[in-house]
Length: 459
Image (cartoon, rainbow, N blue to C red; front, side):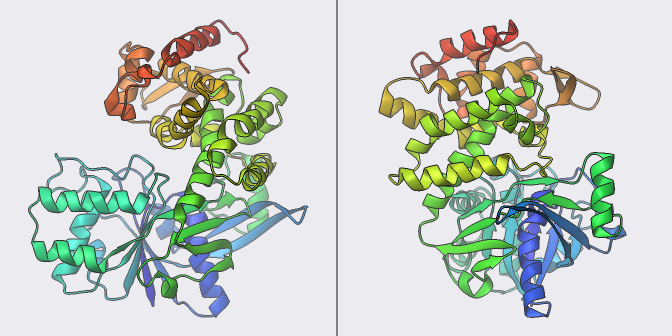
């Protein structure tokens, strides 16, 4: 048995990683893989997993060979869903399990970080890498071999960053040098790239009823995604014996050049997503499909890709353009109820990771601001500058509705306290650099935000 510890119970992991391992089990006709889900933060509940005996369905909706499809898959690869904040015994039992071979995580771009404030005796309040370090320490103490770590967070060199954080906790907590050597020699941190659009649980009564009819039963964990799926994994250690390449619900590629896949996906798909969302919200769109059926928003996406993103991915512009064309087709999938508010989660860290590198490449090459990426950033700042507190958190008013904004509380508090956009752009703790140092950027953003507030059209 190959056991996978999975930090995160969200829609993406269940419709991507879990669907892959479930498919491998069904192809083999036996249960070779088990996924053990661990809730990474105190918030939320795992009741639905208990109610459904860890069984759920995915529905892949889109086009295959030009024909619309709705593919229903029953997923029963999940062995248990653990809440370590309520009971950490099964969590640490996994650390001591000889069959544990893979650790997967999806804690968003902001999740892989280091904090000097983290105490080795803490748990709920410490970062994911700190929790991971404690888990690995428990495994080392049990005298067991290392594991393969496959983070799917959308940051450059995600596994390398995670490994660096673990090293920092070894220093901070003054852990044994023997443990440091074990971690470096026996744990294989594999950088990865994931690509599948997942809209998650159906939100409208009509879609819920439709999917219930397709599935044949009620499913509180049902998740909707597109048929396309790609998981590029850095070929390290013994990962080739643990994963099967080829198409198994998703396509898995083991590669020595993960950076190509990473850069292409993050900049083209995720970057264009992130640049579009604030503009879409402030134009009254609800889903990505709404944006792609709006002439101005669709042209905004396509022109941003063609003129400002694609030229800075690789020397093979034709291959990038072909991938970008497939991306816009996927964005226009009428089946995917991909809410803009879902993509807007943690927009600041997403813009920094997904858009800023392209922005800087364009500026360095052309000596001028990328017009559409600048406009997209201005819409983002206009949205955040309008945030206000509610009983449940933070919100902003957009045409026709009020939307919740979820991001680092410090960012949202900054704007609710009346902080300026220029001051936020200049904060190196937020961006890793002073964005106002980019010639003309702050002035352009200020002018665009003023125009947005006057109701003027920028697209």
